[in-house]
Structure formats: C-alpha cells, structure tokens
Amino acid sequence: MTQTLSKINLSPENIVFVSGIGCASRMPYYIETYGFHTIHGRAPSIATGLKISQPDLDIWVITGDGDALSIGGNHLLHTLRRNLNLNIILFNNEVYGLTKGQFSPTSRIGTKSPSSPKGSIGSAVNAGLFALGAGGTFIARAIDTDKRGLGSVLESAHFHKGTSLVEVFQNCIVYNDKVFSNFTSKENAIDFQIHLENGKPLLFGKDNSKGLRIRNNLELEVVDSKNNKDDILIHDETNPVLSQLLLSMEPPEFPVALGVIRKVEKQIYENNFYESHSSKMKRKVSINSVIRNGDIWTIT
Image 1 (tube, helix red, strand yellow):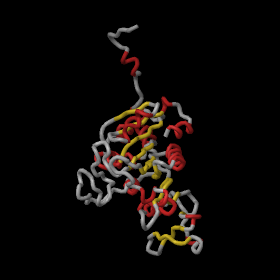
Image 2: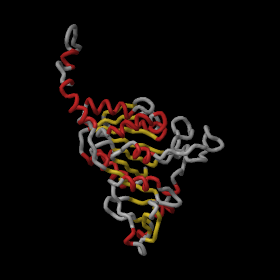
Image 3: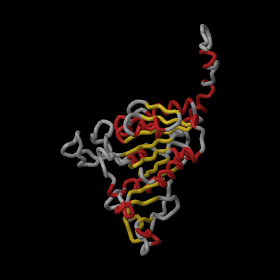
Image 4: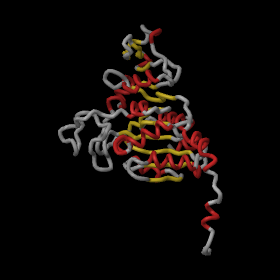
C-alpha cells in the first residue's frame, strides 16, 4: 500500500484512510496520512460524507469480510451503487479474527470455529458477485503475498473514476491458516490462478497450456489451449456476463480469477450531487469567521 501511494505521488495531507472495526481496520494507524478508525460496518457511509464535503481528497476505505458483508452490507451496497470516486479494499480471510475466530459471511460450508464447532452450515457470500449485483464499476482481486499483482490492482483502482472494490485474499495465521492454500500455495498456484489482462486470452497453467472456453449453455469450461486456440475467450472488463462467470469460478473445477475483473465508466455520484445542489450549498460565511465571532481569547 505504501509503495502504491508513493508511486501515484499524492501529498499525504490529501489522502484519507477510513476504516470500520476488525483486524484490517487498524490500517489507518500504519499509514502516514489522515485517517478515521470508525464504527463497525459504517466506514463506507463516513467515507461518502467525507467525499461529498471534500471531493478533492483521495479516499481509501479499509474493511474486512465481517465488517463489510455482515453488519456493513447495506452501507457497502449503497456506496457501490452510488459510484462515488473512492476506493474500497476488502481484506477477506473468511473469519472474524478480532473477536477470536468465529465464522464470517464468507466462511465456506463446514468451517469449524468457536461459533460453529460442528461446521458452518450457511452458504458463503461471494464478495465480487455482491459488488457486481450492486452495480460496482470496478471489481478486482489480489492475493496478500503477491506484491506485484496487488500493487498493480491498487494502482488501477486509484485511477478508476468511480467506486473501486479490491478483494484481497488474506491469510489469517492464527484462526484460519492456509484457508486459501488450494490456489495460493506454491504447488497449486500455477494450475489454480488465472491472471487477467483486458483484451488478452484467458490462459493459465504451465506454459499457458490451459484456457477458458464458453459452452453453448453459457457455462465456462477448461480446455487445452494448444488444440482449441480459436475458442479461447478474450477478457473483456466491460462484459457483465463474463464478469459473473469469472467471479463464480472456484477450485478444483476452475482457477481463481485475479486482477481487474470488471471496469466500466458511469456517472460519479458527487459530481451529480454538486450539480443538483450547487445553488443551495454556497456558504454565506466561512467556518473560520464563525469560530472567531463573539467572545474569544488567544493562548500564547
């Protein structure tokens, strides 16, 4: 994150990190910028107010799977559909880490935890599909240990005009260790990760020996890329059907899609807000003049 901020070369005083509650939400303490460590699930709403009042700020919302998709689900949904120009980083470790390891909205069926000793019985929320359904204009994924891939995605998120959602697959070594090892481990990575580039064929595996093809029933299938070269799908960030298919892929049938999955342009909320409220929002007096009006004293 710090390398990305350095690369985009913005002044620290023009950057704000807004977080909710959880392990991930302590990030504002580790970044030398302005920051709010706010309340559970409400970081997107506070960021919305901040963006409307100070539209020139570069705002990053930091949240986790429990914070964003449980108590904060409603706030996340409306932020995505409004499409403010801000960035949301969702750290997904499929567990409530700060409260000692309970299952979270993204925990898979069968997850054993203090709150589900016999295994979780509820279906998991897919953060990417949630964002797609809410009308998200930028949806991307990265792995916490993939320095290059994560940095590239964060940079793309920053320059996108609209709300960017980046899901980071984050290992929790204390309460949910190796939860993503089926596609992040050294032995599984090559066959169960597909790194997306807009306009490029959807290839993966050793020497790009595998590819994705679409069947007549609009389902994906993995094929030998050498023998099916003309059938391999080309990644299109603007195609919502392809975005849904890629976000739905899971091992062992498919690789996990990483990189920018969805990217489209849409009207930005704060621009529309100011256009429709501009005449009523002009301040008659400055805040400084109000503060200094009446009985005041100077401390030296």
